[in-house]
Length: 215
Image (cartoon, rainbow, N blue to C red; front, side):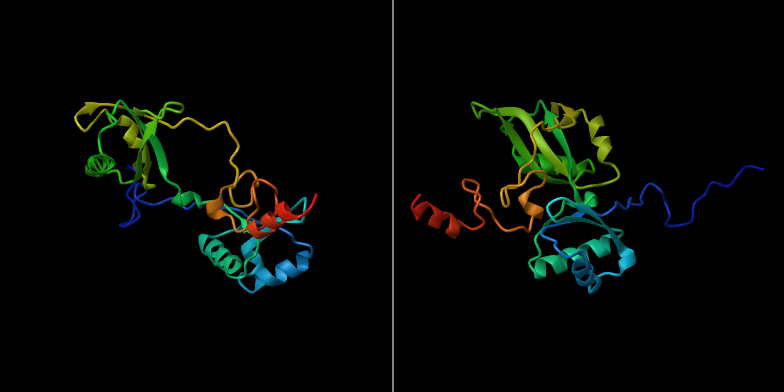
């Protein structure tokens, strides 16, 4: 007798979204770990997270569910707790590069064409030459995360032009936050005090005072 491989109604594997682990949260200037645990306990149960100690009084917090992550981040922001994190993986755009598209094509036209093919684009940006800034026949496209994202690499024609779809080139430079000037994260998910990029002082006013002080 053949095996029954049918799935229950509403449980199709192809339509289920994969649940990604929440991004880690890095908290700075933690001089008393027990005080930090007591603070977190007002928002989360101890079974909902674990921590790891780093140098310079930095604690890495890993929470187990997206709901716990959102609740803790909301609490940290409300109380101005110095921390940084990363964009949740499930919310990250799927980025590709479209090659051989004329630079004069409007971004909205490309979005509409992709929408008709089952791909929703967040952003469409024409790429310019690094030195001359001249527009190139290249477009960087951020797609909404969907199960069919990888199928865009099969696309051969768009806007009546023959194209190729490529993965974006990996950046070789280290990301630097323009808020706290630290490396490894961006300002979008940073809640640390702002630091002047020129002198390292934590506020623009103190930076100006340093310039006026006698050397």
